[in-house]
Length: 206
Ligand SMILES: [Zn+2]
Image 1 (cartoon, protein in one colour):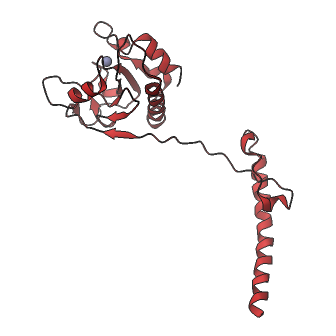
Image 2: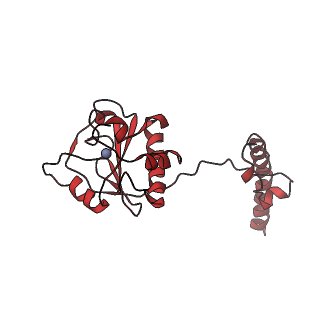
Image 3: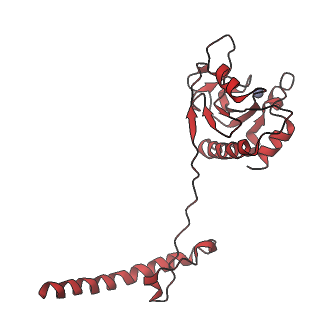
């Protein structure tokens, strides 16, 4: 019997302790007016005191799944800070590009990422290393190849993966949208990729 009474005392003490917590939460919640979506979240316990509990909204982090197939063509490290992303199209199939970009042969070329026709992202060179994808611009940039052609629209699923990857890289390396460049802009005499319609479709999502 004594134990039961002790238990009850603890529950009552618990109730008393809980109340300031709800009030504190509600006060905090009042400052979060810009988050109307979560204001409806009311717990049963706080209902008894007619206080709404507002949980601060945390930015949703989207998972990006990346397969790694490293290329032998790269320069370890960086000569300068990363501040740009250069976009390309492979002008052939994704599988073909993955093969030649990861094989040591007389074609010395690589990129950091390749986005396949089905949206799969493959990392070929680690961002902290220098890939060989854009003459004169390699040391400061991350190169992304989209499997496809400059004169054909990329698939919706590739644009979705590209958006996620580019936004992740922009946040991680503090890259400005104006520094997302088309290969054709930086080497106009030799390159046409990734094509006007493709770069516009990608930038429209960022
Ligand atoms: Zn290119």
